[in-house]
Image (cartoon, rainbow, N blue to C red; front, side):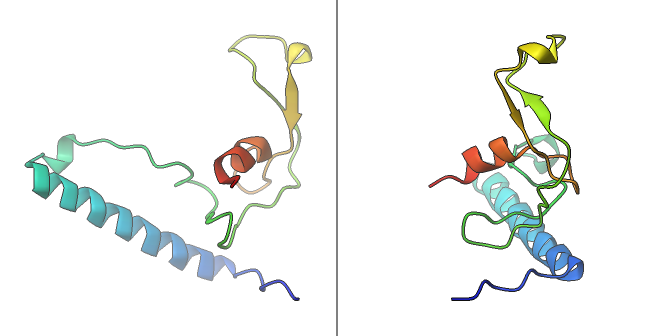
Amino acid sequence: MSAKPRPTDEEFAELARKRDEAVAETVKALCEKHGWDPAKVGFHASHMHGCYCACPDGPCQHIWDGPQKPIGLEEGEDERNAPGWSVTCSRCGADAMSHDMRCAP
């Protein structure tokens, strides 16, 4: 069984554009349904910045060869006290542990 070829940067950009368009349409439809002013609506969508990621089944633009960083620290806490470390994506800086927690089945 062979793996699917990795999409090009242009293909990832098109996937992100389609995703962003679909999200905007969903927000617009919800605003219309509930009579909300779209200019006053905010929402959070995980991983809509940086790399395109449709894990676990879709293509993922992350490249996990960035530097390791401490995880699980409060602001200002010494990194030597970190309960764990995670490799990061060299493209966007996302940490692999957060990615895997979000994408795990």
